[in-house]
Each structure stands twice: as structure tokens, then as C-alpha cells.
Image 1 (tube, one colour):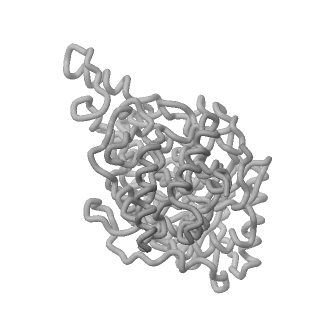
Image 2 (cartoon, helix red, strand yellow):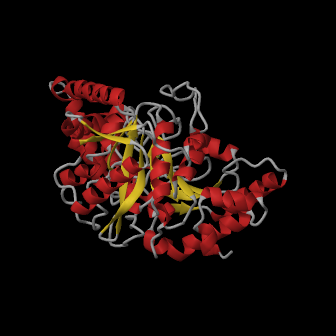
Image 3 (cartoon, one colour):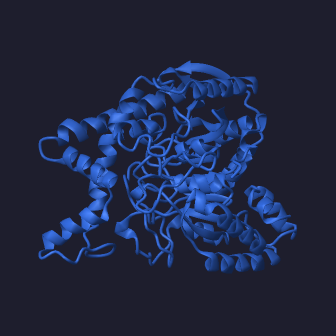
Length: 487
């Protein structure tokens, strides 16, 4: 098998070859590194590529395979979004503020993948501090969509989604605060899962909005997504919001028919401004789910229209508090030219943060300030409770809820950078799940104008097994997940 073929495999396909000793982890890793060399100058999915570390880890993985005790992800080359701590490897958040920061510890998810002898090829580009929907807010360079290099890959996990779509890694981990895994997965034609809040440890994830952030997998198909979730889910005492629950084998949810399942279609999720091609692909996918045995019912989530406003009060407020730690004293960029401490603090943040991060800090600081806290932040928290209860009521009647993941296909680079509100609307269908803390997955569900469309499947809290079951059934009934961009 040549390198291009090897790098295009799924995790489970590569696992069979590794276990059968048809290929080695070193060969797989060199194939991925070769693919990166071939396309990365056009895609720009990586902030850093760590060739020597990857080959060293692959050699160790081959030794483990030879002993016959390989785990599902042993020897499989992967990428991590560059806001997850990797000991000895720079973790920049695609920001000048952390451009030279090298963590002295691993994030819990990094550690859990290393325990399976996974191979870290490099770190994925993102919107600075995960704030954005297009990966154009990276302080270093924008990532491009492998399906059309003049278009965005989505964000903030645009690097991970583009890398998986372009076969520059077998899988990646992203973080999702308002759709940052699912939206880029949709725009790049891959699978992306935002787990239930607290199911995957956030220890070592650089915080944006702590009550909304969640780490999850971006993969080439649903089986791979379940395999990665098996590895990273589970209780972590170092994360105070981590759930102490039993983790099932998510792969056992795959391959089941959909008979007996009720799937809700909320009318409010066919939003104004949705592209006709996206709506058509979404309705076609819903028809397919019905033909596979699911009962399709209309449902209503009337407070959906308030979710965007709630999110853009809560997330900036939490970001304002979380990013206060970047003071130029303990770590990260520090402006040494100022004459006073306060001057140094002001200049450090002025030069270290990009425009979108500054915008959100200001929005959040305003919402939390005296005289506005009750009017904005407190009211947003109350509406958040209403939205969460609305989902709970809906899930008393249905097993899952489906919608388009994004109201549009990938848009052109620069098309929305001058209009923040239009950019924020990109997440209108994904952010309610973060507000409610429920799981959601995006799976390839069609094409419009030659670009991928994703279907979003939402489940009740800890209902990952159900959304995996539905996503896999849809995937197996179609061939969208097998299509790859021709770079």
C-alpha cells in the first residue's frame, strides 16, 4: 500500500492492518507525515508538526503491538487541537499570548490517548482561544477547507476538521463551546461529536467558557468516533465538573436498526437564511432515517430563538473571567517596555490578544459590570434554565432530535470577517446543545454546490449511545462519509 492510501484509511481499517502486521505504526506515521508534506502548505491545518516525537512514539507503539497487548488506538497517528496541554510540546491556542508556552503537564485527554500508545503528529490550528466560527481568527494564519481552498473550514476547531478531511491525521480532538466541533465537521464532511458536559475531562484544556466547553472527537466515520470516545470519556478527579458515571462501550451501539426510536424534528431549526441545498439535504436525511424504521415526529423548542443571545452573554462573561489570568507575570507573552505595572498589564493584553478575543472580553466585562449584571448575565442564566428544561421536556417524547448542523455550507474566506453578527449566526443551530449540556453529533448528510452538508443529531444527557446508533445507521445507508476532497 502506498502512503496516500494508508493515510486515507479509517482508524478501524488501520487497526486491522496493524494487528495483522501488514503495516507498522512507523509506516502509518511516515505515510501521514508524507501527506502533511504534500498538502499542508495549501490547507494550513497544523500550528506545529512534531516529526521526531511522532516517529519515536510509533516505534514504541510497534513494540507494544509485537507484545500482543495493543489497545484500539495503539500506533494510530492523531492530532490535538492546540488548546489542549501537551507536556514538552508548545500549546499556543493560536494566540500571540501563548506563542512560546510549553506546558509542564499533559491534559487528561492527552494522557488517556498516550496510555493507549497513540501517536501525536502535531497540534491543530484554531480560532484564537477557540473564539470564532471560521479559523480566520488564528493569530498565525487561516486554515482552508480541503474541499475548496478559497473557503473556510469552520471553527473554532477548523484545523482538526480540515486535517481529518485532508487525511493529514486519522483523527483529532476538538473542543466545542458553541458548535466548534460540529460546525467544522459539517463544513469539512467529517464526523464530529460534542459529548455530554462533564463526560470528558476538561483538565488541561485552556479555558474559554468553563460551563460550556467540552472536548470531543473529529473522525472520518462514526465507528472511529465511538472508538475515540471509548478512550477519552470517564471520570477525572482533577476536573470538578467531571461526571462520575459508568462509561459504556460505544461501539456496541453501532449496527442496530432504528425500529422503536422516535426522532423529533424541531420546526424552529429550519431557520431563516438556511441555504436551500442545506435544507434539501437535511430533509432527505430525515426521510432516510424514517425509512430505516425510526418514527419521525414534529417537535417544538420555542426558546431556540433566544439561544444565540444567551450564548453571547454567558460565553463572553466566562471568557472575561478566564482570560484575566493572562497578565504577563506568570506565563505567556509579557510586554517589558512599559514604565509601570499597570502599563505593562495593559500593553501585554493589547499586543497579546487579537481583535475577536478583545471584542469578547469587552462584551463579557460589560455584561458582568455593576448595574448590568442583573439585566444581562442573570437574565441569560434564567433563559438558559428554560432552554435546558425545554430539551428535557422534548426528550420525554422523543429519543433524539435532528436538524442541519450549519445553516450554510462553507463560506468564502473573508466573507464574514467584517460582520461579527453574521459570523455568530453560523452557530445558531449548534449552540443550544452547549447551553443545555446535552450531546450532539454531526455526520455527513449530503452535498450542496459541491460542498459537504452535515446532519446534527442531539440526544438527552448521557444519551451518546442513542445518537451513535442513529448516526451509524444513516452513515451505512448512504455513501457521503466515503467521499474525500481531491487536493
